[in-house]
Image (cartoon, rainbow, N blue to C red; front, side, top):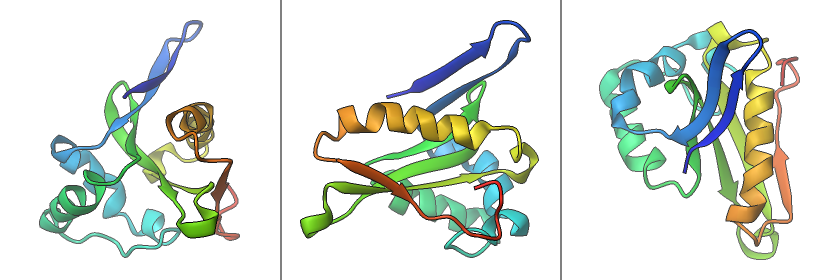
Length: 141
């Protein structure tokens, strides 16, 4: 399912959308996944090979129940995911996102989070709460 934020009709800015991330996005994925500036705020280490990126997409992203590419004009510039908790906490979902450093400070992640929040409770009716952890050193988060 693709969610769109629409183009800004007044200034013709690119369309923000969310869609499944797939293997055809590997080159775009490597832009942010291989960037030390980006990975320092993430729970994973910087990717050093395209093969490792392909493995991640095949074995983690594709089977994930809710993992989307953050796109500008359908070009993947980051990713956003929701992971369900288990047991007594299954009513809570954890939100995670990553964005290529070139796009930081433009409000893109904020818009993507709002897009997720506006749909995830319909798609996953068992959720009552969406949470995200932030790195205190990352003021933009």
